Length: 340
Image (cartoon, rainbow, N blue to C red; front, top):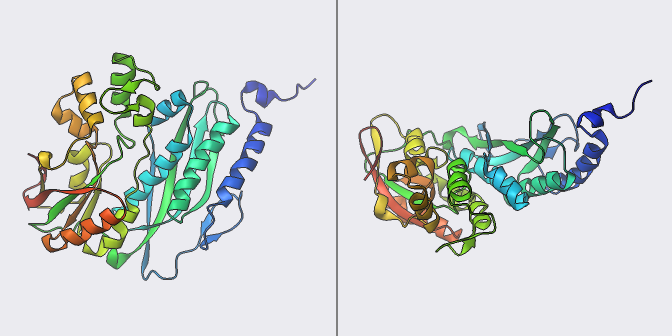
């Protein structure tokens, strides 16, 4: 005789998944924009191209939040990593001058915990609403033989649009252009494997432990939301020659991606104050300065490149959006990045 609920017995509860999806659909509905098309829960998400953009070109990017999800699991707080995911992806297409249109999320887990999944999507939806972007769809996959109990991974795909004439490719960057650094909120979504080893394994701290000189717990410091630079940069895009999102690889690994051949970014390391969290990690973990700049953003989450006469205007837009900036260097002859 056939036995009931063999799939649930194997670790995948379809009834629980359906109940969670119903709750998630309510959250997703709050992100619908005038450009959204199609029905919620359809096999594909649909969004219309905005009519006010001439020669529209789509800009797409996919990313995740890495092992930051392990901190969220330890702290039992899951909405912030959802917002991290959206902001990270918004920044990645912003460097091309693109406006966000739609987002897709992907949650993979050992077995679905409804409250966790809803928290994750609530964070994603909050990030989408902040950017007037539709959460067009997504996927939640239960894979009990692949993920340990209580664990999950989170990734997302963003679709943006830019007029090809206004797209940033880095080819406008000129000798003498100025580098403008934008303040980060913390580690953002990179370097967590090293940070977790230093704080949890070597220093034997917990998520509720107070970090000396930082006036925050470990959980608060590590779960600070990855900042979106859209409001701080978008109004000034016409005055900007290039943009670099400082993610994995730090300044040396990301700034060269926006430089044309024959151009070098000379970065003055003393031109901004490195936040205390990075100094603590370096001292506690005995990490070299060179490695710190390759692993972490070191307090600079985005860098714009502008002509000297436009620097004040570009920085004024950031200040109006509540983001601190610094002049951190210039473009010189050569290749790549020089940290001096």
